Image 1 (cartoon, one colour):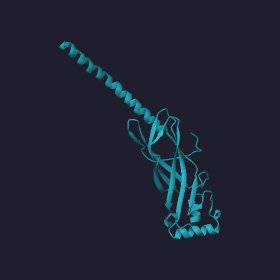
Image 2 (cartoon, rainbow, N blue to C red):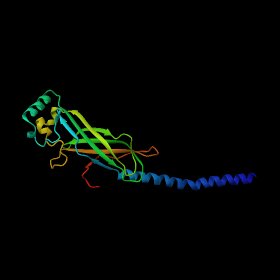
Image 3 (tube, rainbow, N blue to C red):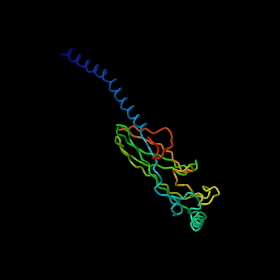
Image 4 (tube, rainbow, N blue to C red):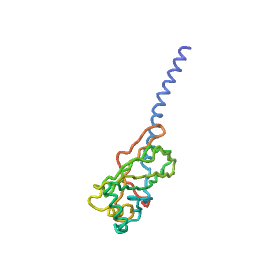
Length: 203
């Protein structure tokens, strides 16, 4: 009986040893599949929804003269009083083209103006992304424009083309860095910030 028990025990240990490489291989395959799904994620920046400078709508201001003399004077007065708020509202579309359920832990973004960082922030906290799903992530910019940001120009000139994403003189761009969380709880941040394309960019 003792010999039989020992043989049974040895057999169980042997089976476990044999199963371990397969289990490890399965886990590695699942992780590789997740990594592939992370790389396939698509982010696109929608056009500007709202753009206001000093409370005035600048969504379609393409040159300083698109603002009346009275509007320009009001903006100049606000700048001198150090009270020139800039309000921008945008959306990012995130699409999961893979067959794997994903979780976006967060999406860091940098809003760039004329090639320099205007502001940065985080959106899309703990968003679930099912296969083929598309979600909308808001990006809101609220800041007071300092005199130094204008580099000697007027507020009206600063407003020109600020909200235009399609023209050759586009000034506002964005870079993003997503961080994902796997089902097992593994956190996978992207290495660096990458430029985000517009929704008009073909997939």
